[in-house]
Length: 337
Image (cartoon, rainbow, N blue to C red; front, side):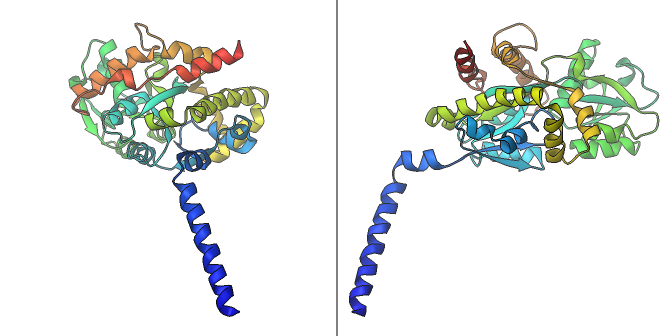
């Protein structure tokens, strides 16, 4: 009797094992049930994703999503490039940087926002113009957004990046060096520029508000996700516009959710929001379209790629036609008609 029970149990186990192996070998069974893992980090334009998670907006749009928070933005970009994420929130210039080496490809499918003042060049008391920066030490994280902002500001005033002495440091360390008086200026994004302003007499010289479109913040997914689960990419894009609608109708609750996610006070969150322009459907359609200024991402991408090659941040630009995909934004628009 015991032996018969044992053999029966073995038979059940083997049947279960065969069923499990059979199911796991089916691409539909595994891929459809697995959540799409999206990375995001501490930037005002990306905090709204926490609203979707808390208010059930992913479920409403049939988006099987798992959000993964990164305290370190760079780590999130490295994870996407290594194929450890299905998508990530990152800037256009950083997407250009990683696209050439990403194991599963990288493609921007949505613009969350534009930096509209949240990226700043903070200077010491004696500096009152861009021209005053000539020969001065500017602490900045080389090759990334605030270095690009600095370059745009210099070029607009007939100067070159070589006209200043670049002190290349990670943004947090750059701010620390500036506050300690080891640099005359610093390029920073929130919350770092708030720390920079603690230096006595320091002030904002220029910000991203002066260069609309120069710093777009995006939802970037793998080409693999676009090819194999386009319905989930569409659901993500659809969810974004539901988030914006929720924010408009529930401003106080939205601010509370975002402040909690960012681990900042409501006052700080509102301050950082002021420098962030969240992108509507119309804004997205314009950004993805061709044009001759920085508001149009195909144009902006070319200028950013040239900048990064010129400063030696990347050896060569990737195929820029492969990193922008507006099909999901357009599909959302079609559904609204």
